[in-house]
Length: 226
Image (cartoon, rainbow, N blue to C red; front, side, top):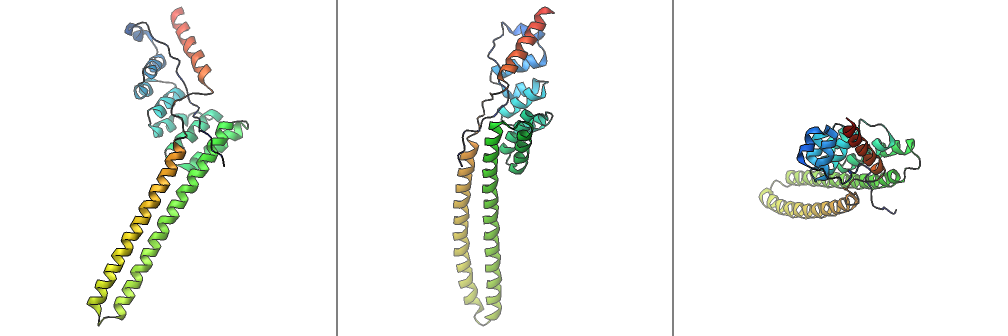
């Protein structure tokens, strides 16, 4: 399966500089949020925006994916569901992300970015399940070993001290080896997960770029007329 770069369709703020700080006194909350966003303060922008999509985009940019998801939940459009899926993917909630992407595709069958993200979320969920299965298997093996040691100790009371020491040494060696295997597996899983998540572009852009610019120009125009 070819996994191309996961594009996050959020919002992009046009690079518009304000003439002076005095102008901020006459700007709406959304206009002030745009200013913070342009200046690289995504967290402050998120706290300032009133528009839920713009607020969500800023939270996402700031790395607060839980709050971004809460804002995107207010939008049930294909774009909103897609953004929900992106936030959930970053949170590691792959099953929910898959559902969100599927709903986005149902609403917009030609939504290619959603289709691509869906495949990435499926791959991440697969890795997550493999890691969980590996951990469960290691736990079962350890439980079986403990049960065997208990049985051996009961059947060999006469040589209890020597047997216990030998069994303890063997168990320690096996536990150490198992821990090394677990650690290696975790490192491999984390490496692969990070590789897939690195496909996410944290720089918002895409479908709403022109809409954002138009809305901004409209707000500025309305303010000048007033």
